[in-house]
Image (cartoon, rainbow, N blue to C red; front, side):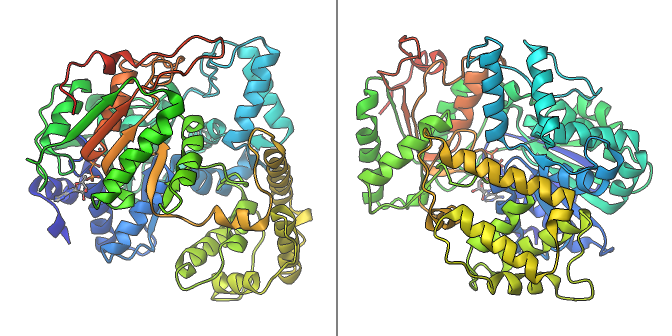
Amino acid sequence: MLKGLNEQQIEAVVEQGNVLLTACPGSGKTRALTYKIAYELERLTNSKKIIIAVTFTNRAADEIKKRIRNLNADDTNLWAGTIHSFCLEWILRPYMCYLDELKNGFSISDEFNSERLISELKEKYGLVFFDSVSTRYLPNGEKEETINRELIDEYHEILSNEKLVDFDQILHYSHKLITTYPKISETLKNMFQLICVDEYQDTQLLQYAILSQIMKGASGSCKMFMVGDSDQAIYGSLGGVAKSLAEIEKEFKTTFINKELSGNYRSNQQIIDYYRNFQTSTIEIKAFGSNADESAIITYNKTVHKDELVEYIVKIISDKLEAGIPEHEICVLAPTWYMVIPMGRKLKSLLPDVKFDAVGLSPLLKNKENVWFKFARLFLVPPSPNTYLTRKRWATELINELKDYGVVLFENDDFKSKTLLKNINSISSKETEGLNYLKECFLKLFVIIEVDFSLNEHLQVQWDFFFKGAEKRLENPDFDLAKDIESFKKMFKHEEGVVVNTCHGIKGAEFDTVIAFGLLHGKLPNWNESTENAAEKLLYVICSRAKRELHLISETGRTTNSGNSYFPTRQLNSIIYEYN
Ligand SMILES: Nc1ncnc2c1ncn2[C@@H]1O[C@H](COP(=O)(O)OP(=O)(O)OP(=O)(O)O)[C@@H](O)[C@H]1O
């Protein structure tokens, strides 16, 4: 099984103590983490033990599950997801009855709703859009210091009145539960064989506290396997902290073995030497891959006007495709989603024959934490041999979640998920508008399964939020979203093609060619970014995604709301380099 690893990776994987694996970009940290999971899954002697993989995005969790299956490992005992999903699934939902704030049902306030609320409150309290307010909590249960405490208190009051819990509160209440009731940590520690954390450098204080609280449970022998690179810490403004080995040992009150990997399998040496200009440490990086000695193409354009930017990028993409580079090996990225979304739309219209995997605004917010979203995806993704396993997994997740709400489906049926899918597949609706279609399908399903969900507080609270939230989103004139059922269905079709995303969205990924635009001070880094070396770290992450080609762009013509021009990011502009 360990055939695809080098000596250093094997050493890290077979180590039976707690491991902190730190290494440069492209050195195979994620590969080592994936093999570690497969290795431990194979060695499990107790079928009740679970291996946890905490990833930064849902996309990364899906990728890990896919790679585990490619290694022919049985993933039945693997749970992979973000730290928020972890807290919801393992702490909040099973133990919500212990907290007054949650026991009468709650729904998750998604980013869209929370951002809207915060910006309304900023206006009310006379703050401007780039004033940063923190909604985070500290491990001691207090709210984090912020510029306007009254605003945050009112924000929390609104959430509470609407029975909503935001992402920071998911962490806060989880921490509260496991510190108030040590039995919970005991149970979890006993249940978990191993907890893996990818990209640990972006972990928040409260997240470390939750994981360490679980590890402090007296019984059980759960181990930690954390991988990351402090040079790639790009969530400082969102509270991410790259703790040192000593700090981690202090936090977890146990020893960790520090393992390192050297070399880079991804980029050629010229790309590496270029991005080391932004490195905040001094570690040497040697190219190990088959492309190590190839020459790179690195360009920097700071004269192209924003109105000519799309044509400029179209030309680079077309040239690469003509040279035989596959679509999915090309990536276009920018610092923020509001720069990336219009770019994706324009590229699609100018290159109609090219496939794109572009972030866009979907008609329904992908709020994976809402139970009705989970029903929606089962109705919107049609059954087929290709989707069978995924839909079956979704159905199992739903059945387990409903059990947490006191709704037990198909009590004496051994094939619960199959039965649920059969019922869902049997339902049809003539409604052409997405939301009406879903409402009708949900109601028909609950008639078939003979459950009156209106009597269940949890399901009812989440229903109200799901439909109210979706209506608000669809009615927002700025978004201009299509309401028809086909557009709803499209949001689940994963297109493989040229990737168009933000620099945060492509963390951990790699491409032959990376085209990065919007490299302007105020956008990269953002005006309100206060973390040290934020620009360097973002540039480091962006440039280290490329295997062979890098095109950097600080376009002209962009202005702030008050009409001032944006200028190239200083840390990039000041590099003296002989660009192609
Ligand atoms: N032992 C190895 N032999 C050959 N290729 C490898 C090996 N380890 C990793 N790779 C390849 O190197 C590339 C980078 O690996 P991976 O994504 O795991 O690196 P990483 O350290 O997690 O990078 P980053 O920090 O930039 O996300 C991948 O294409 C991976 O398949």
